[in-house]
Amino acid sequence: PQQQGPPPQQPHESQDVVELLRARLKWQPQDDATAKATGRSLLFYATLANDTETLRALLQQHGPAGLNAPMRNANLAMGEQPFTPLISAMAFGSFELVRQLLDARAIPEHRMATSGIDALMFGAIMGRHDNVEAWVKYFHGAWPLERAEETAGLTALQLAAQLAIPGEE
Image (cartoon, rainbow, N blue to C red; front, side, top):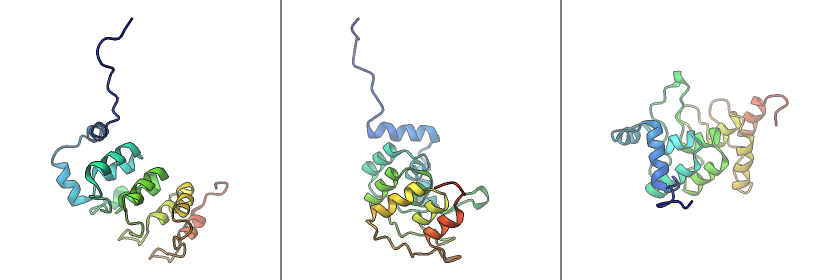
């Protein structure tokens, strides 16, 4: 039997994937203004979800708006930190996500105000050795590995070694 009518649409168009994220978050129109004030944007949530397709769509639709905005009112008691989308991606996402942000001109040197930790350091702290290795390759070995966080003066590699789990890479 032949199929009648057009084939079902797949949610591959950029607007569709952004609308799916809005629906999952129960995003309301007033949330756009809140996002500008707090840093809790759709872009930020796409990095937490490791959603490369939605991140790509958001960057295409909105350009670099909010790309380097840290969370401004992090609830430290609930485990939140003043992450930028790049810091979040290094800890919780794939390097494909990180690469999209870097290619869109995310500032890799940005540090969290509370600790002086940057994206590479936070990736190391969270045990994302795959992302740390890819970061060094992305910068062709030119990233200053001696760059230290501000509280104890530890570099990303020292943080990774100090926090390593025995038996893990």
